[in-house]
Image (cartoon, rainbow, N blue to C red):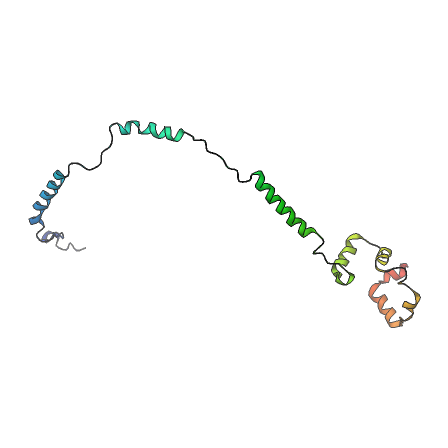
Length: 166
């Protein structure tokens, strides 16, 4: 390490502004004269003010003034609002807006879900869908059953075990 000739340093590194010490005395004297001229700060506190301040604050905080309470929902307003709500409810529940449903507008998926959940048998389904005069021999006389159609039906809808046991 180099010692950088520390014993030969002539400059301290600090500098003062020019004419700093020439004006210093004038500035200190003007500050003293200003403080003597303004002996009264301009604010005055009444005598024994801080002695009674705590008691005054506690008395003002502890005093509770009773105020008149106006409820948000008085009986008159509640009656008006409930009558309007009832009128609107009746308007939407009346049959003015209802449309007549028919068999063409029923969704097929809804009917399937109803049949599955209600566990209806084939007789109940037939009684729901067909009336007494709907089934006749003439309606089945036009249908021809070929051997391929019957064989395909049995292959798709039955198993070998069903055919053997029956």
